Amino acid sequence: MKTAMMLERGSHELQDRAEIIALPDGGLVLVVADGAGGRSGGAEAAEKVIEMVREFTATRVSFEDEAFCELLKSVDRAIETNPGAGETTAVVACVSADGIMGASVGDSGAWLIGEHGCENLTRLQQRKPFLGTGMAMPVAFKAGKLSGTLLLASDGLLKYTSQENICKAVTQNNLNTVAKALIDLVRHPSGSLPDDVCVVVCR
Image (cartoon, rainbow, N blue to C red; front, side):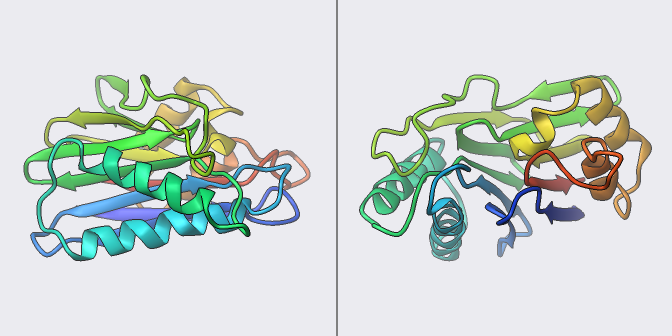
């Protein structure tokens, strides 16, 4: 499996975070967290997601079906009790020889894109409450073995362009250019972005 990742600031402070974690068995855990804008502590909340996913995966080789839901519930409680942290979305996806599994909260997403179309793995997720409220409701997702491209992205991409444009950019670009091509979909003619944008791609 090969991966690409890119984050770009669309506001005064980059509040998106992303991580790619290699597992001992050759699998990968991909993470995207989008700190809630318009309030303080969003970046800190998103950083806490990354920190706790790193800690969680460091002690495990395999994961039960609800493992990432339970992890995100723990993250929710940890952020809530941190006075310096705000709220954040999160998508966590584990890609292994057995398939894809993960969980999400908020409006960041995980899409599986192939020659025959696009499957929104996070279509059933609960947009709110975000992590950090103590009331978040993570929703698990699963898919078969990776075929095509797995995309994790914040709403800075998903909200400001169409599924058709995203799928076209993914299928028409190689791994070296796909992350930039995706972000360029939502770039204004001036070069600025409507929001922070974060993308992680796995093939």
